[in-house]
Image 1 (tube, rainbow, N blue to C red):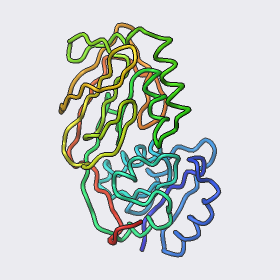
Image 2 (image 1 turned 30 degrees about the vertical axis):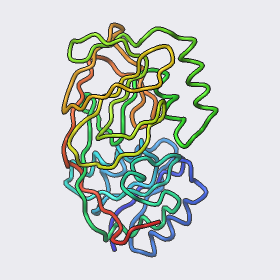
Image 3 (image 1 turned 60 degrees about the vertical axis):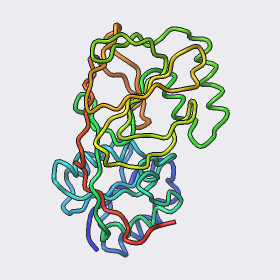
Image 4 (image 1 turned 180 degrees about the vertical axis):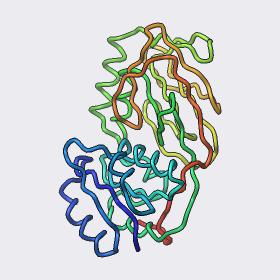
Length: 262
């Protein structure tokens, strides 16, 4: 079969690492299990073979997807994290990472990626403390929702941001790679990953329950504070503003199993 798979045992399914590694070896796929301080991108850059695969959560996937784009190589997604949003929207069975290995000889599909100041993301960028908590409420986690709503009520001030120079009083902001189905303070699924459009979602008011939605191909976000708390594909970070956001249509070649999984 061939190919190279990076495995992140810290992504939430570490107990399944040995089974995944053994099955990959049986199929002729070379593997590398990340050490404590190893970078997925640096390991992928040293990979001797194509296609490149990543078994990890959404944050790990984006790092190796960047290397695949630079190489012009096909990319294999193995759901191995906590939420696996990108794998879900590709139609993969998130319960069975081993089944995803069949993609190394599978069919190819080109999908969009997005960037914030050049940094790639596959799913979404959220801005502010509240939006990070919103992401953790995926799957009906009522406790996480309660925590998010409590913080919203205790902190009435907005983020103090502008979009392409226009002031916007926003308390929750999400920028997504393609269109999400939304339900109040919960991100749903995407029906397409190749629309070639970013979506800006803004929630207003004391207790946000609806989203203002705008499709865009590129735009700039600025903030009075000069920086913003953010989560990129669910990983917390802090970004210096202004933020330049753009979409790269069908920039990533993804391999998928030939037969539907699940």
